[in-house]
Image 1 (tube, helix red, strand yellow):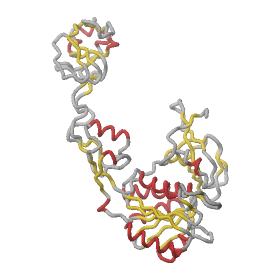
Image 2 (cartoon, rainbow, N blue to C red):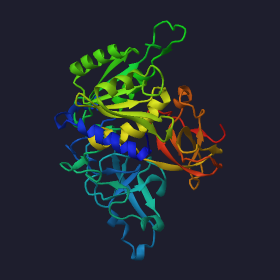
Image 3 (cartoon, rainbow, N blue to C red):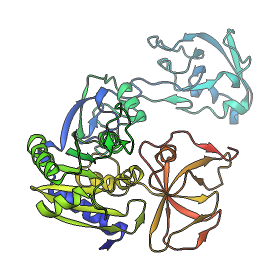
Image 4 (cartoon, rainbow, N blue to C red):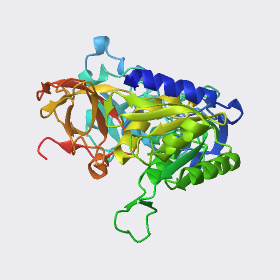
Length: 432
């Protein structure tokens, strides 16, 4: 049985809703451990930002009215310099008819209502006892010129960061500016407790001697890292063999011990002779197994095991990863709210790409940087289309959605792109 990508995404979302637990959906964490999490409650500002009115520029604090003394603003204005206001110093008072040197970020002297940059006065220096401002520059000095008013970013007691904000670098910087250290607690949206099941007779844990015919387990660490980044409450891993009876026994024990809200399996669901996940779950759970019209990641499974939702992913590492981005991320964002939903954008192809009949292709790619702001983003595929090419996938920072069809998409064709978790931060330039 085959499904479209959209139909399977909706089915995964419905399945995760079955395991939703409101009692664990909100979690208080110290800021030091909340990076990448999504706020569950509004964060109220404990202070105003800026906490005091200050200078936006290195220059001279003045009364704007001092520059309206000549008819129609004609003529230059000369003022004596009455002192210096340094950043970090308590605010002083500006005497009428004078200017005061003021540094960027310094408190605006009492009585001043504007700042004129040092490069707009004569001499353009702080080593002077008087400044002259031309009529042209004087005409630009209004109340509030180059002044950052107290509370102009956020006022004390108002919402600084609303619920739904991802605590990325900018948000964490804002928290620090508000005086919240790493021990300050915030309430974040908490994801499910997840049991991850990977393995097979040929799969070994990293660090063991690699025997003939064996491979190392990439999917366990991949899923654990992906789920933690996506806001899962906890991740328990289980490595299994291809013995159905052992698989059944160990799965029952793991579910009883971990009490997960979600089970994710990787591998063992295709048409081979030793598809232990499919054989066992078809016997012991309410399951759907079939194909989604996409490549990689076609084989998929979904159902309920002992009242716990089960999402069965294909076993090739790239298929597992792509399935997480296409199906798990939107479901976790919609049901649990613990991660940001996928945000598709568009770019143009740097090179021709041929589609597949009947299946949407999800190629891995890297955006190219450009100095031309008017130019559309350009994306280049990295590696081939095969689902075992994990090294090239690790270089990608986007997925390209290539529509089904055997036609070749020429370079310059606009395609949908999806920024992906864990992809390369570096963007290649067109010359690379």
